[in-house]
Image (tube, rainbow, N blue to C red; front, side, top):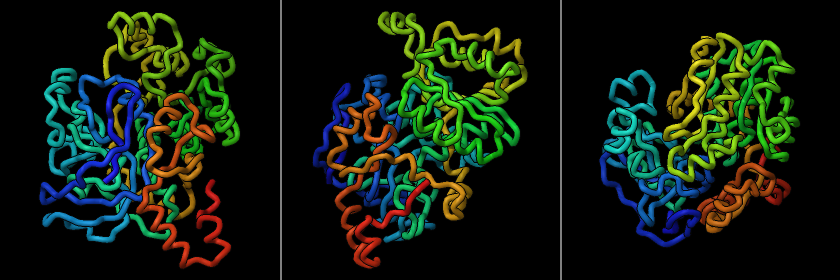
Length: 413
């Protein structure tokens, strides 16, 4: 099969590798139809976790496909089911999973390095380094999905592939951010980052009744997207002291603030110097702005990937302002089938985030484009495998001619 393999810093290659087999009775083998590149994947692409990678590792944590084979203990899936593959690998049995805190699973990540860094191990994550369990990813033509009953979500054949691909990780992470921030009707919300997760959080905040939503970024195209969606865009290039700027136009501050940009969003020069000396790998610049801009007693949520340590963290303002700070990887299993129901009902349409579509075989080019914010349309690429293309041709043959010629897609939103 063809798979996207990590070969080193800024080096991804599509190569032929053996097709995976069932190795545990709870496994499923899924033939991938569509996949995409996650912002978190750029951590690996840019070399942030090189010491936790091995040359040839298969990348990917956002994909959908069709079940080809299931292990003898898989109960909810059968051959031919269309599924979303969730990135978080959870056991479903430990205390954390029983509380639906799936990303904190005690069982599925054997990494001693993570335990040494954090004091505990988090859950395993598909395609995301030895630090997260060493699981092979789903940017491939086939994927072995562990604990398939909990890691796969069934989807009907009549839903646009882009809608359910967006549900694999982006929408669930955005909803998780709003849950962490306790966003509710009437709130003023600020979201740092206007990428797919950030824009999703902004749109979902409106769905939850937020009266005003600010979107912060440095990319003009993404800021225009935020504005088109009814948000108030703030360009941090024009307002580098963005916390002060928000307070100048929103004196009471933000009720809820969300960090959805991660390690790639430093705004001050000392971060570069500290990274060069090996003294800092994550930046607290964004978190500092967030803490300043959030009202007394407000809530802050961190969902942009931050892995290591940071200098100059504003712990005093955090404490003195009585802020609630929460973070963590999404446990997407918790939010299905609720989010799927919103899509089916037409209340949420994640297809907007896929601003370009291409063949899976071109994924290496799209890693470079995504890392440089050069994806056509500015956001996210939907990559279709040969199997996905053949499925589309088959479904189009069953459609009226006018729909088949347009690709069979809904208009999205």
